[in-house]
Amino acid sequence: MGFKRGISSLLFIVPVVLGLVPPQKRATCPDGVHSAANAQCCSLFQVRDDLLNNLFENECGDEAHGALRLLFHDAIGFDPKIGGGGADGSIAIFNSTELTFPANAGIDDILDVLGPFLLKWEHVMSPGDFIQFAGVLSLVNCPGAPKVKFAMGRPPPKAASPPNLVPNPFDSVPTILSRFGSVGFSPEEVVALLSSHSVAGADDVDPSIPGTPFDSTPAVFDTQFFVDVQMRGTLFTGTGGNQGEVESAIKGTLRLQSDHELARDSATDCIWQSFVNNQSKMQTEFGAALFKMSLLGQNSASLIDCSDVIPQPLSFTGSATFPPTLSHADVEQACATSSFPNLPTQPGPPLVVPPM
Ligand code: HEM
Image (tube, rainbow, N blue to C red; front, side):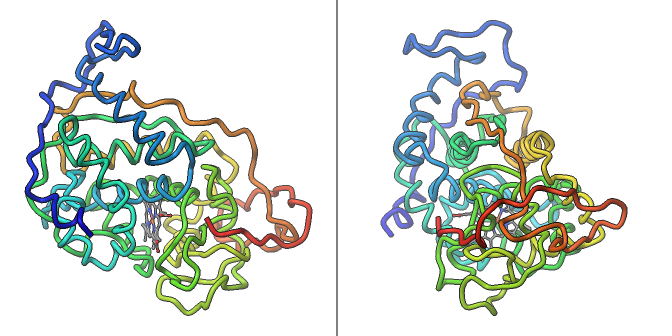
């Protein structure tokens, strides 16, 4: 992998940094087309257009899903006691270390595709900025996703993240909540962040079925994920018996053990249920938590707010349903204080969701 070998020696030009408070007047950019609240954000429009057209190819597909996961795996590499630089780009620059962490399985695929773009724009953005920028932009073509804020000015990474900071799908709920808690995320924010699994799937959990989605609508950022994971598991799409996987309810999907347990643990079950069919809650809370994640390990006061470079994602007007042939009777009720919403059942024969 050429990218892995070449990148660590590069120098990165970090933009001059200002406060997060935008100036009053919008600056017209030198291209004469765009304007930005802070003139230093002007250079990002060309990077944005390149990524949307040539990396994501204007789709909520493989590359978009990979870039969103990469944002998380870079940022979570931080702990106030253990160390790590958080959202610093270390996962790209020190990939020879970080890609050996088992929880980073499959991250090499997205780094291989995204790496050349990171190098192409290294005169404009640091690796940490680039990874967060790409992650936020990955949502633009996923109908229903929120517009997430973006701030620029992260310094280059100094070292690889320490091991064991990225959660595994076989970790217990207390372990997961404690890992996120150590970097300031509440159980509500953890569940909100897992909205990302609405536009996601697995290549490596069951390697016999790469590209298997976590819900029945992997190209739409909707609350169907919270429904599908709450249905009683009855089948494995692939071989089954893989670490970190439990039975799912819909052929063609794969259910992570961690998602399954977060939907059923008393610490998070009612939170999980509260996202069902509540698109605006999902958007608001996920957007806020993702932006907070993008600041992990960073000095937010020294970053520039460049949120006006991020386009509004495609809209979504649908609502959650029970998959064909399934109904309220197939819900594995967990929340003790309110019952799962009753939803219409989609017509037709049992669903078989195609690979992504
Ligand atoms: C409890 C915490 C989490 C665990 C245990 C977890 C685990 C996983 C696993 C095992 C995969 C499949 C990897 C593969 O086999 O290809 C995956 C995919 C993914 N995860 Fe998570 N995840 C967590 C939280 C998050 C968060 C917070 C985000 C983003 C904010 C995220 C975004 C994604 C995305 C977008 C994918 C799909 C990647 C692709 O399709 O290429 N995950 N996650």
